[in-house]
Amino acid sequence: MSKNLNQIISEAIDVSVESKVPVLLLSNPGNGKTTTIKAYAKARGYEVEEIRGSQSSPEEILGYYVNEGKEYLTHKYPEWFIRVCESDKPYILFLDEITTVNEYTQAALLKLIFDRQINNRKLPDSCVIVAAGNYPSNLSSNFKLLTPLTNRFCILNLHLTQNDMLGVVDDYLTLNGDEIDIPKLGKKNKMNEEDVFQKIKVKLKTFISSNSSVLMFHKPLTEESVTSDVVYGLITPRSLNYLGKILMSGLRLGISEGTMKQMTLGLIGFGTNSFNSEMELSQFQDNIDRLVESIRSLVLGSREMSVATLVFNAVSKEPIVVKDSKGGLSYSLTSEYLEILERLCKLSMEANPPKPVTDYLGKYNVKSIVSALISLDSCPEDITKMAKANNIKPNSHIALDITDMEIGGAEEEDTAGQ
Image (cartoon, rainbow, N blue to C red; front, side, top):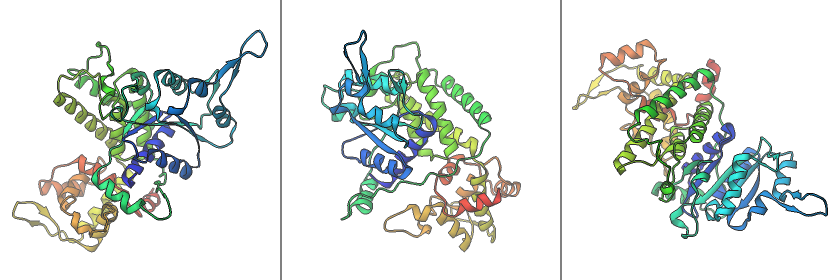
């Protein structure tokens, strides 16, 4: 698994821990889901109890009843359940190969996931349920994901790119075995949670209303949505409830925009599965992206503004305005400006071999950064005036993109300033 996908998985499980919404990781075989989950557990202090779907029966999952010569049958709990319940340590209950189980075993898993208990004995609150499986297209026709099962999860589709594969060779092809880097859990964002939650509810209601032409809630939901190479969830009361929890937890933990978009698509990405064309589906999913962007903008606050101020101060030390041949805006680049760009780009986006940060100025030029700064509600007036004088328009997309990057050394400055 590449560092990029390791981060996505780690962030998704962090959100699952915070929100209590179980996560289902789907990918092609051999992409390292199991390895990454076990590395995550080690890094976060969890034990792992693995139930392998292809080797488990309903009785091994939920237990069974025996006749001990009494007037009633006695329920016997499965061994895994006793280990999890009686341990002093928190557990990740890892349901592996969940897509290779028959419908009877899926039904048992469905009950366990939804009830979080067996025969009135509950799983500990500290127990986190994470599942993994391969795409339906990787399986024989005997197996399929049932819609009720997918509706119990936040689905995370994991697709390796060419850069991911190159990263695997560089980072994990070693003589000494697997060593997986799991990002540290950052500090939680401070926010007025009730206020933010009410704003999220308003945005979700607006999203549903504005997409009413393609959301047909009166029609039966079909299982076609779980037969393609990408599996997304359907909009139901349960998935909307899950989405609210996921979004709040993501904001609280400062989860990256990419992971939040992936998780939102995993919950509601197929709408009501009533699209008339691929274009309608694509437009709907683009609207989901914009929904996540607008929700993340609710908490663009002290951390981002601290970085914005650093950038502006460095840029404005020598405010020499130059018009290029296309009329674009640029500034003379001070050493402080380059240093901050390097922090924003996290050492040149961890390129391998490393490239100088100036190679990325085409993406994050001064005009782009200033447009990002003035999109923030807390942008100082002098920055806004400077932008207006140079006809620079606000761009929240760039702001979100920049602030998604890990900023080395900025954390201490933010804390000191609060």
